[in-house]
Amino acid sequence: MTPSRFAGRRALITAAASGLGWSMACRLADEDAEVIVWDRDEAAMEAARAETGSRAIAIERVDMSDPGAIAGAAGRAGKLDILVNNAGGSLHTPQSFLEQSEEDWARVMDLNVTAAVRVTRLVLPGMKERGYGRVVNMGSKAGRFGSLFAGANYSASKGAMQAFTLQLAQEFGPFGITCNAVCPGAILTPRVERLLSERKTPEERRAMLAGIPVGRHGRPEDVAAAVAYLASEEAGFVTGVMLDVNGGQAMSI
Ligand SMILES: NC(=O)c1ccc[n+]([C@@H]2O[C@H](COP(=O)([O-])OP(=O)(O)OC[C@H]3O[C@@H](n4cnc5c(N)ncnc54)[C@H](O)[C@@H]3O)[C@@H](O)[C@H]2O)c1
View 1 (spheres, rainbow, N blue to C red):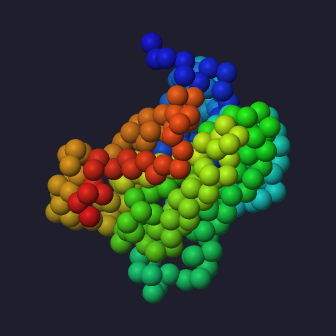
View 2 (view 1 turned 135 degrees about the vertical axis):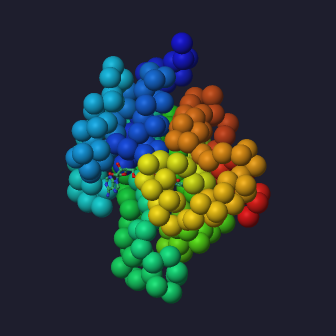
């Protein structure tokens, strides 16, 4: 039986009806958290509902690019002990910085940074009042080292999330609130799997794998386990950390 690390805890995970966020939601709920998942994709939400089973996961339609929707849903969320700012992504459009438009920049920054800032601003006051909180931001290997695969706008947005994490850790530590970031390398969600097979030759994929010391690609469960640790009570002395989850790949860059 899994331990009930999160009994009595309530968590919000943004953009989480599929991919890494869904894996985190299941992991926290399996350890007895009550989890609220926001997403905008009806099909993904339907599939997630079908998979929820007996887990205490509530799934709500919230488009993270809509500040009004965020404010409304945050108001309905009630007490939150854990916030995972998971929303984010790259545009899969031109990878060269010189080809990325100003509009691309704004879209990526809006979803990957500004949306997290908006949610966090609404959730932190309650955590501060209760003297307890765990904020986990989704960074990326791209934010630490850059990424020719994801592009400059994505890397810069994840770098901003790292600085945001450090700032919150300093400012809210005195109120029992920790803030950390998880920085995954490529994790084989169905979307990433598809992208890699479209953009990388089998040879390039083999070379990629050879650059990962643990000898395999990452799985959503690897990221969920890292998030669960940082979201747990026992991680109370850990704050302002960028936790790399990349099988050691960063050492080969
Ligand atoms: N998958 C990876 O390899 C990887 C690596 C490093 C970092 N990350 C980061 O982890 C996080 C999750 O990545 P993922 O690959 O699981 O994402 P994903 O692209 O698979 O999307 C997950 C969910 O986000 C939802 N979503 C997208 N835009 C939304 C919006 N505007 N409002 C509400 N929901 C929205 C989608 O509907 C989907 O259900 C992101 O911040 C990403 O940058 C992922």
